[in-house]
Amino acid sequence: MKHCVVGFERMNACANASNVKELVERVVSNVTDDKVILSAIVTDNASTEKLVADSIAGEGNGLRCASHTIQLIVKHAIDDTGLDYAIDRVRKLIKSIRDHHASNRLFQQAISKFCPHVRYRSLDLDVKTRWSSKYHMLYKFNQLLKPVMYVVQKGVVELDIDSASVSKKDVDMIRAFISVLKPFEEATKYLGGEKNPTIAAIPPIIDRLRNHVITILSDEESSSIVREICTSLKQYLSSYFDELLGTDSVPMLACTLSIEHYLPNPDDELVALLKKALINEGFFLLQHLKENEESDDDIGLELDNRTLLENELDRFLKFKEENFQKLSDFVKEHENNADLEWWKKKERKLPLLSKLAKSLLGIPATSVPSERLFSFTKRIQSDTRATIAGEMMKMLAVIGLSSLTVRDMEEKLVPCLRELVAQAE
Image (cartoon, rainbow, N blue to C red; front, side, top):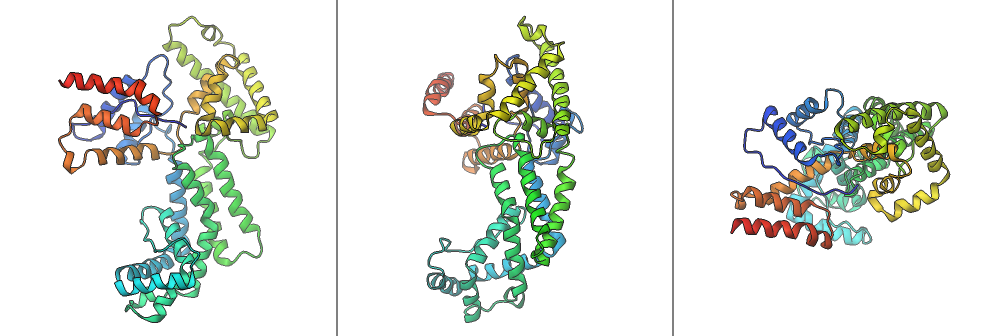
């Protein structure tokens, strides 16, 4: 999904729930009009922002960030299986090697000797709040295990007893961790990546993760460690995602209308339930749009006809089923904005359904874009630029975070900057 920043507001008052809510409502009123559909309000995971989102959207209408939810699932699985003890010993060993100059130098020599083809030349420490960083720390540790053990055996640095006691059982647990959790790391990376996937991507991703752990559990040759990890993962996947992926949930409805993503295991009963939920959702949305529109277009006259909406949905589902290759080619051509581009082209043929599709397929799967915005603006207003003016801060944020081409910059942003300079003069 493409994104760009259309505005930026600096908060001068205390960041309590009341002031944040007032600011969000002002921003929303500034960017919405009769041609803009507000699909969702995305915030970071701070408690204040969550309270504000609930008060505006209504309690129970909020969706968990999919990327952070997977992080929580893996964290709980690690806690349940005792992996955290093995991980802690590895962490201490890595820190001991990195912090000691002689051992680090011997470690580099050992890499050249034992692992000349491994592209990693150093060990990383994890960030405790991000399980994916644990994955990368342990993945590198496993790749460079021979050089690590070589340094320990040489005794160049005096390691404390805990950090030196990474046993064969610990190594087996770490390798099990890496093999089982690779798909989880890939899912987290995709959801939090620059493609900014929408909630339509959530159902097929969670289905793949479930099938992954179920396949391992059904394999009689799986070790007890692997089974323990997978059992815990399966339990937490169900507890966190079963409700989110119900037949009337927003991610499932969005996936139904997506040309890029397909429903997992769609039997006739599931499709019938989703069609009913989509028609109800579409009818509600179109009624809402009619109340806010003063136009006399044909859509407004046909709002009371649920049959038309159902007919459009049947035509779309049949087309999606029969034209897999054609839609796949369209997705490849339009990269990360395929869904919205396709529905834009179908506004005339599927006028009612296209409005619903654009509303559902405009919701991001994670809060990562929002958090990325906070990180970026923090770099703009650093300690050395603490007095930067509000309007200049706004323009820098818009330029830095907008995914615009050079031509877009010339046509849209340069005139704005010229106007800003003229006002300053």
